[in-house]
Length: 114
Image 1 (cartoon, rainbow, N blue to C red):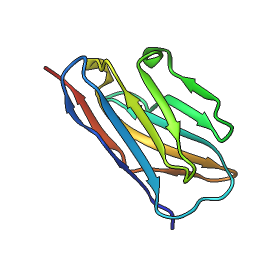
Image 2: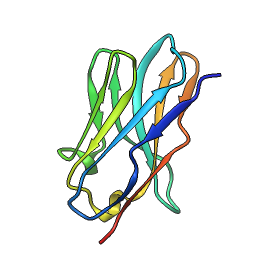
Image 3: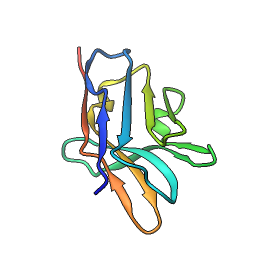
Image 4: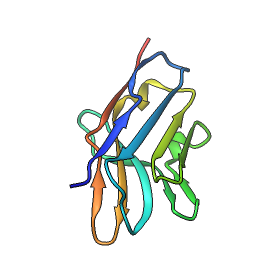
């Protein structure tokens, strides 16, 4: 069974940066989108950023200009987060989408606080 392993979360002050990483335990075939989601306490999980296998990207409005999603040839996916704000505090999840199945990571906590 494929597992997605995330890393890079932590505690950072407002204005700081973090880089999240997500790798699969084995090769996944048929990928068409890789994405990061987040879920803050008491809120629904929301899309943060996505990248297609062709390299097209999409970002949620609150993170545009601050976050950058990327992937490598092994289909690991990364999220560079700059100028972090308190409202970015959440558990961040990576997702790798194939047809018909989506794979999810276990989540990594990002806390932005002074």
